Image (cartoon, rainbow, N blue to C red; front, side):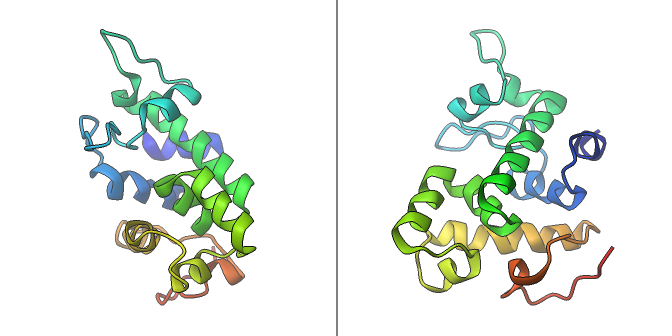
Length: 158
């Protein structure tokens, strides 16, 4: 189901690794910051992407609805930041924080941000974790050129 939704939404299937890294695909996973579900949506982000939250239900736990919301969010982050590593950093740390680093430094490359210590350690570890998980899960990241600078595993073109 997750791969089907990503295909329908035009999101590369290798990004299924985000759900693995976030929650090992557990729809009941809850973080100390109240991120919930497979995709670990914070309440506000979930609402922003159409996931309802009431006294009786929280659609962040609904596998298909939250997967569609995650696909939209990832696609929006890619459009905003121009490549997948920065989109993943924003997914982990927040798009406003990543945008602030870009505004303040002019750096628009995840690997440079990481090398300069402009991101928290969790985010510096998160992006390579997603890329590595995509390899382990059989996906081949479809990022090209500078986006992969700093990534040590060889990837094949599709």
